[in-house]
Each structure stands twice: as structure tokens, then as C-alpha cells.
Length: 189
Image (cartoon, rainbow, N blue to C red; front, side, top):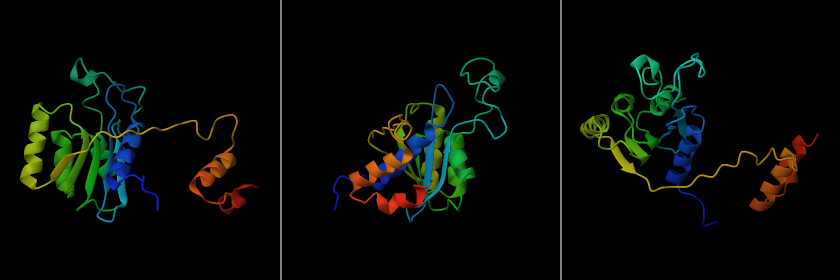
């Protein structure tokens, strides 16, 4: 048996980190992954504008008049993960790349999430995070910080000029100890 596999925490936090790579926010990218008690992913999300709101039209600025900043328009990763869920999140845990603000804490509590695992808390001393922790504590939602993890995603793994998707599958199968023909016969046409 392999000994160097990643833990469930590392796996789900990696999904949250991968999700945050979808955010178009130039200053803060946040991802969330909601997992039920069977370790099944039931929701993912990242911070961005609501559906139908063009990313090129709405502002991404952090400073200026309120309506000229991103703040009245952006939906946070945690809320998107709840809204995008494909099953109940009651009793679930959420993995987030950044500790949730007080608004997201309200949604998490109301939806029945029971545990929060976060990676960073760069706004720890702000009123928003203080309020968030106060509500999470009062509602009995557990929270803990994960140690730093590294996620390296190579976007050109499949699309480099020297390989086809079939070559990629064969290389991956060979590294994993599988016979490539078991997985490539159906797609070789």
C-alpha cells in the first residue's frame, strides 16, 4: 500500500484552493469545498459576481465610492458553495482558503454546517472576523486552522505540443501501475 497519499483534509483543502483559481478577483481569490459526513463533496464555490453579471462590467476595485467597488456585488466563496450544493449541507464541514467574514458565518450557521477548516486568517483582528468567531462559538460550529499546504497545478499537462490526451493517459496509467490499454481502448478511435 502506498504510504505517501494525502489526508482527507489535504484533499478537500486542495479542492478549495483549486476552486479559488476560478475567481477573477485580482486582489483576493477564495475557494470553498463543502463535505458531508461520508467524505462526499456536496458543494464548491469561489468568490465572484452573481450569474448574469458581467465580470468585465462590474468593478473589481477595493477602494472608492461604495458602488464603484466590488463589495456590494461579489458573492463570497462560502455562500456560492452553499448555493451550488447538490445535497443538504446540514451536518457538513466546509474547507475554505480564508476565514469567513461575519456574513458568510451567518449563512454557514443557518445552513447547518458544523465544522469550518480554514487555511489563512489575514483579517483576524477585524470586527468582521471577531463577529464571525463570536457567532460560530455561540452556535457551536467548530473551527480550526490547517497547516500550510502546497498545491501545484500544471495547466499544460495535457495540452503540451508533444503529447495527446491519449499519451497523457498512458503516462499516468504507467506511473500508477495500471495497463494503459485498460483505459484507452474506448477512446483510441
